[in-house]
Image (cartoon, rainbow, N blue to C red; front, top):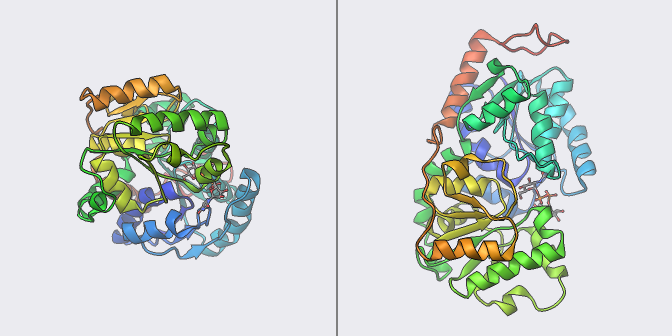
Amino acid sequence: MKILCTVGARPNFMKVAPVLEALRRHGHDAPLVHTGQHYDRKMSEVFFDHLGMPAPDINLGVGSASHAVQTARILEAFEPVLLEHAPRVVLVAGDVNSTIACALVAVKHGIAVAHLEAGLRSGDRSMPEEINRVLTDRISRILLTPSKDADKNLIRENVPKKWIYRVGNAMIDSLFSHIDAARSLGTLEKLGVEEKGFALMTLHRPSNVDEPRVLTRILSAAGEISEEIPVLFPVHPRTRKRINDLKGAKPSERWPNLRMLEPLGYLEFLALQGGAKLVLTDSGGIQEETTALGVPCLTLRENTERPITLSEGTNILVGTDRRRILEEAGKVLGGKAKRGRCPDLWDGDTGERVALLFDQIDAEGLLVADHPTGRIPLE
Ligand code: UD1
C-alpha cells in the first residue's frame, strides 16, 4: 500500500522514524516528505543522521514564517506532491503546523489521513499545538493513539470507536533503540558533568519565552537552582533570540552554572536526559521521554496534553511561579523525587503495531460508505 509519510519539525522525526522503518520493512511503499518547517542542520538533519532515518524523498523547503504564512506555504507546496504520488493514506505526526497542513490537503482530496499521536488534549486553546491537534484529529480517519486518555478524549469528541487504534508511543521506540548508543558517546564527560550531578532545562513555548517577564522569572529560578547543581540549557533558536532581546545582564554572566548550549543532537540530548538528576522543560515530548527513563521532570506549564506522565510517570506540573519551581526542585535535589512507571504500550513496538495495522487495511480495506465522496478507501 502507498502511505505518504510526512514530517516537518524537530519533534516529528523521532516519532515517524520507527513507523517509516516498519512500514518499509513490511513492504509498503512509504515515501517521506519533509515540509522544511525546521531547516537548520541542528534542528533537522542531525536527527536524520542520529536516528538512522532515510533522507526525505521530497523537501518542500517552506522555512519559518508566521503561522498563517507557514501553514499556507505547506498547503500550497504539498498539494502537487500529493497529487503526483496519489497515496492511499497520508501519515502525519504530532501537533506542529506541518501536521495540520498536510492533513488538510489530503482530506480535501479524499485521501485518508492517519494521525500518529492522536487524541492528546491540553484543553488550552491558546496553544497553537492544541488547535493543530484538535483540527487534525477532526479530519483524520485512522487515529493512532499513545494511551487510554487519548482514546477517551476522542470518544468524548464523538470520533467513532472503530477509527481509533491504540498503538502506543512511537517516540519511545526511538528512545529504546538509541539509548545505549547515546550513553556510549561520552557526552557527560565532554560537558564536564557527572551522572546525576546536573539538571537539564529546555524552554521554547511562546507563552514562556515570548513574554519577557515570564522568561526572566523562569531564568532566575533556573539560575537559583544552578547555585546548587549545574544546569545545562540547550537553547532553542526562538528562545535564544528572546534572551538576546532581554535587558540587563546576560543570564550566563549572572549565573555561571546556568550553561547555555547550542541545540543538541538527538543522541547527545538523550544521554543528558538519562544522566540528569532533574529535568525542567516546557516540551511535550520530554515529559514522555523522562517518564520512560524514570528521570524526575518538572514541567514549566500550567497544563499538559500528556496527563499519563503525571498519573503514571515522573512528571510534575509546576507552572512558571519561581517559588513553586524552587520548592519542587528542592525536593528532587533533597532525594525526595517522585517515582513513576513506564505506561502500557510504551514498549518499543509501536512502529511494528502501526505496520501490522496497515497490512490489515491493505488486505481488508476500510469503510467508504460513511464519507460523502465515497473515495476514502477505508474500512
Ligand atoms: C515548533 C512547533 C512546536 C514544537 C517546536 C519544536 C508549531 C506551531 N510549533 O515551534 O510545537 O514544539 O517546533 O522545536 O508548529 N528557527 C530556526 N531554525 C529552524 C527552525 C526555526 O532558527 O530550523 C527559528 C526561526 O526564527 C523561527 C523560530 O525558530 O521563527 C520558531 O520556529 P517555528 O518552527 O516557527 O516554531 P517553533 O517555536 O520551533
